Image 1 (cartoon, rainbow, N blue to C red):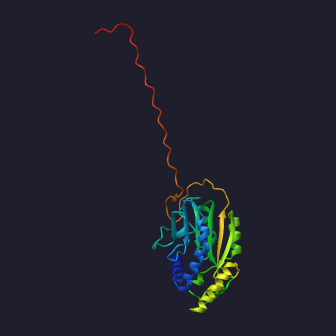
Image 2: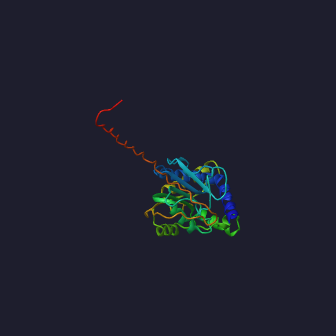
Image 3: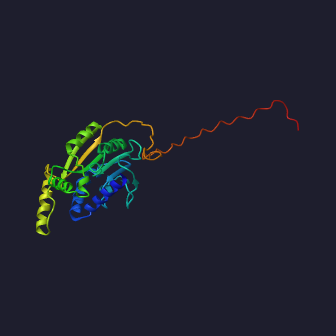
Length: 266
C-alpha cells in the first residue's frame, strides 16, 4: 500500500508541475490566502500535494508541518494520512490537498484529521469536483486506464459535507475554481483565463476543484495515549507546554539565641 500511495502522489506532483497544474496551484493559493491569514495558533499541518510551494507557506502560524507518505524535499513528517502519529487536539489548522480522493479509506483519513485538529480549529479540504469538465476528463482517462486517474475515487461536495457533519465539523464555506482550464497561448489563453476568473468570482458549481472550509465544533477530550498500529512508539505531542511558574521561596525565620541566665565565667 505504501508503494501504491507513493506512486500516486509522485504522479500528482508531476501533474501539478505542468503548465495547467501551476495555473491551478496559483488559483488555489490565491483563494486560500485570506483564510490562512486569519488562522492563528501554534501548528499548521498540510497533507497530500505540496506542488513544490505549499499552500500554507505564507501562514502567520510559524510551525508548519508538511506531511507525506514518502520522504522528499520539504517533508517534515513521513506518515500515512489514515494513521497520523500526532496527539489528539494538537493541530490548529490543517490543509488536506487531494489526500482523501486517492486514499483507500477516505473516511478513516478524515477521522484522523478530525482527531488531531483542535476544537475550533480550521480545516481546508481541496479536491477535484466530479461534476465538472475536469471531472469528466479525469473519469474518461480513468476508463482508458490512465496510471493516475484510474486510481482516482472522486468525492463529491455533498458526501464530504455529510461526513464532516457526522464528525462534528461545521462547513463554513465552499469555493470552486478551475471551471474553464486555460488553453492555447497568447490572446486565447488570456480570454480563457479571464473567463475562468469570472466563474470563480461567481462561485459556479462547474468548478473543477472545490475548497471546503470547515471548523471543528466538538469539544476536546482527554484521550489516553495510543500506540501506532503499524509500529510501536508514542504519538508526537505538538501542544506547547506552559513554562513552569517560579515559586518564591519563603525564608525560614531565624531563631533567636537563647539568653543565658546567670554570670558567665571565663
